[in-house]
Image 1 (cartoon, rainbow, N blue to C red):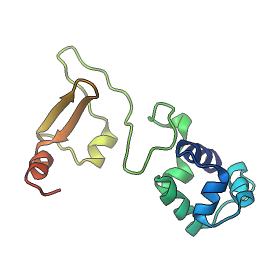
Image 2 (image 1 turned 180 degrees about the vertical axis):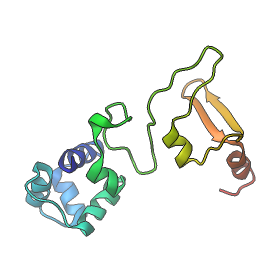
Image 3 (image 1 turned 120 degrees about the vertical axis):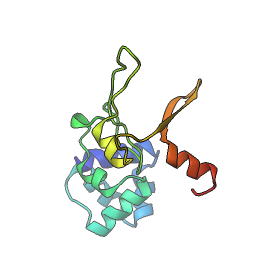
Amino acid sequence: MFKDNLVSARKMHGFSQDELAEKIGVSRQTLSKYETGESLPDIERGKLLAEVLDVSLDDLVNYDRENSNNLGLGVPPKGKHVFGITKVGEKGQIVIPAKARKIFDIQPGDNLIILGDESQGIAIIKEKRLVEILNGKE
């Protein structure tokens, strides 16, 4: 997983092996060994790779494209999520996936605001959070 995630994240950022190797202070050959699975970085170098590639260290090491809800996409950027697919019921209701409810602390009885942009889609935000943003408490 690590080697595939590293290659995917590097390419997503448009870095050559030389460029990424320079950013983390190793030779291109060393980075190549990470990408082929011939060797693994130490924990500090792994943290630096995750930081430069803007992914979590956990996702860089453990993300499994085949068994994720990320629709076959590569390692997600840090703090970004694809929670999977949900179907709209006959009356327009949707079920928010459990992982999304946990990460965003959505509880029964919470008020959610549905925002829309015809060119970009729909967004959902907790009412309390929107009020905080509007009041400048980001």
